[in-house]
Length: 323
Image 1: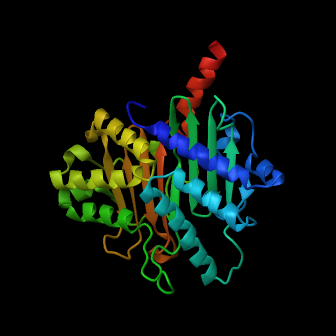
Image 2 (image 1 turned 180 degrees about the vertical axis):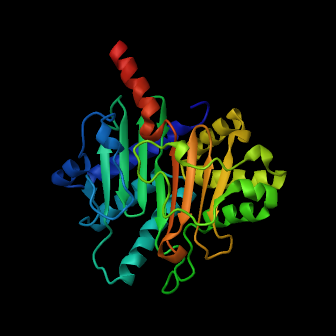
Image 3 (image 1 turned 180 degrees about the horizontal axis):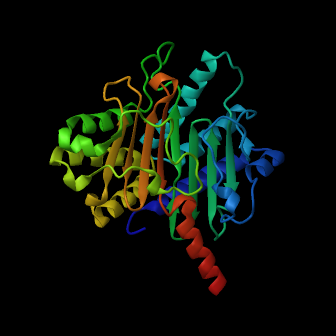
């Protein structure tokens, strides 16, 4: 991972895991460590951003000190703005539950796989409705995708959070870009008048860029439009811990920003149902605000080949087999 100080981030995450383990009961520790022993097991690629239970330790029955420890772990797995976004997804979900008269505590599930204090790979996941955080760490690097955040409602109409748009910057940057395009460029970028009902990759175990429209290439944009696209990409990458986010951006620059492309579907006016995606050789980004008459947003950042640290795990197990 180059010269970036990712090891400091890993040390913080390791300490956050230890702090969580120290406040859990033995049965809770067993739930936290649910899952297969090998991190490359196929079932570890199973995930969803829909409501419903997951394997792992549920946050629903945790005490105050335990909830604080989970929150600290979530913060350690993100940059400061990324942690604000992840915690915001939980807060918006609380508002949604209150709107429909649902009671009870937050329902998210935390999983710890492998041994953070050992020499082998280890991973943590936190999943629930509209939040999916995946982190894998080996001796040579870390990976943080798939990373999914959603908001229902996308814009809160009333109550203490009235006016809040959790994914507002993700929406506004993309709209500013598409509305800045002239007719010729917009004809390449806008692939449909009606947007899809959800992100196109859904919760597929492998992110297939062929599912996404080709869109308008970065190299065919004006300098202002290129800066807007670059800012939009950085908005997603910067969810990750700063060192890793910078590495991802540096890799994109090294491969050539001309390989980026942007596509849009749906209306251009705020409040219209819409969708967009960004394609690159190594990653993809998707966003939709189509359900509930355009007041229910999804966003995801995925690696094309490296989700769940597949490349790091492959290298680790290959080296282990050869030794």
